[in-house]
Image (tube, rainbow, N blue to C red; front, top):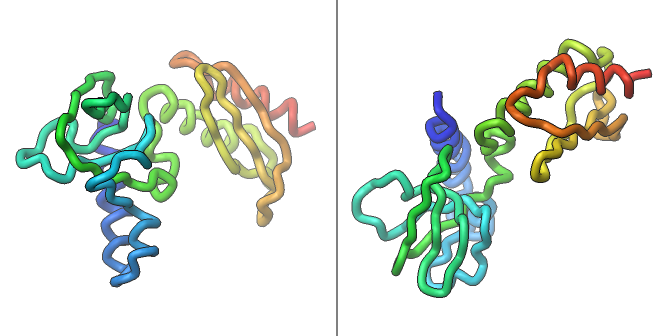
Length: 177
């Protein structure tokens, strides 16, 4: 499954049911999606949005805001670096927090799964994965104590497509001592 397919399926399976069960509560609905029909001032680069007034489906109808210009919003296609300028469009922002780590793309998504595997293979039984974040080429991972949200330790490492489960496991083992 491609990044785009996975992210779109995650939107369908997490956002739509959330909207269905929130009833008529406007506040609950905005936990999942927020409309920016007439004012795009609340939108930012990196937001996941869908175009409300596009008539025909296209590769950019659901995508990430790459840049906000005075006359248009530049959308990046999910799973690629292709860009599209949208003029005279209204957007709805999708709450990425509801999608979890399934929103990650490319090397970040693969690194996330390598981290999960490294925790499975190298961490002690009572140590569990808690959190992952990416800042440029640095990955930060936190662990927690089983049955608790308390942080046990944090590791940071440079990541790329060649990062291995073994190299992540070595960092975990060093912290387990």
